[in-house]
Length: 168
Image (cartoon, rainbow, N blue to C red):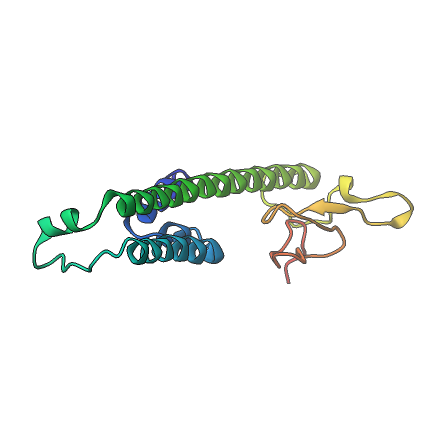
């Protein structure tokens, strides 16, 4: 449920403040790029159209009258594009998390069936992980989904213990 709400939250935050939605997704470079694009584009448009600054706290009605449509429309468009990008990146991240979770569950079930019980596997590596001629083929880490060496007790990518790791 939480993974489904993250893209929406990222899009809403990107509408409020450009780049903030990407920050919640921990996409630092994208957040900086979108923020600089929207703010830099706004500053460039204000300078190009020679718009005088207006104090929004003094007279809120003067803000809409002081900013021409040629300046406001591109800024709004860039902000909406930033929100759409934050939503799409959030959806891609949620899909990747679901894929990794499904792979971890499959690995847990495979390991549990190789051990002969329904609990988490703490025995040797699964029979499917043993190759021919004594070589150790790669297996998939249940935490990060990357291939790792079956001889190791931990994933060398994410350093999480593998299900067949012997506990000390």
